[in-house]
Image 1 (cartoon, rainbow, N blue to C red):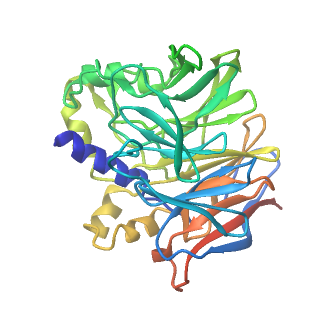
Image 2: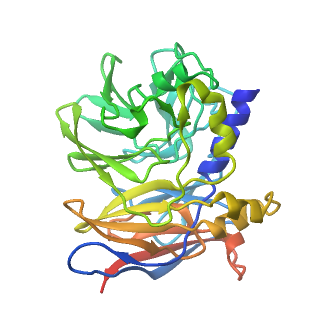
Length: 384
């Protein structure tokens, strides 16, 4: 029961974010960036869904409900191409969808403990099975499956052999050192660890840091990794079927709300302090032209959270207080700008389309005007 409550809390925390303003420049030549709305697309669907992925080959957008039980596929004009709701029973059952995204054009859902189920036109067409007993206590806000050569790559679930005890430091010590990405041979099903945190990561300092949530993006032969709770990016180079750590990029974010790690022998105190404020989250990154766009929200301090009180509006007041921003880097990972605001009603899951536009879905409850259907905003990164 305690594990289920923690999973629900993690899901809620992961799926509650947003956006607003401010500017800071970094480099010898000041640069000012903005995200300008170039177009909006209306989807004829009465209900709340968020945009979570884009398939560049078919140019389809994938939207889903909050906990991934139901999804839409739409084209660039907002026409609904497919609408599906997962069944909890039967041969194609998806009882606990903990991640959703495109993989080679297929809608792919993380369906533990089986693995990753693939769907076309609402029909299951295959599965990447996890060939060992596993357990999951978090969702994956960005699924990130890809393939190379004769191997699949995907977020590695925790092995069942990892003893879950959230009041013991040894559990966290072991968890932070697990592989983050795993590869699987398409022919034999053999698995191999493909990527871990570098030894220089602050998460390996023998303190308790809670449950970092991996989010990663492939950019040609580079993989960029965020662990969600840190204002930093781990950069890896893909060499064959493995990833070699290259560097850590710290993201300079004024007023970032840090969580408070605790000593291993006081692990039971971590979540008590963690619940008193909303720490900042680094939620995504994209290559847009010659720049990297790093998406984050700063968090809410303990004093501000106390003023807001217990949420009685579905968390909307917290989302307004904790908007989404972008930090801009050049291709050499020099930071050019920070606190570049997204539209105030945009949701935090977002994608980049083939035109290099950032596309976000609108959160209806954050808008002062009511509209029929789901609205997508197309944003262009501009430099002045």
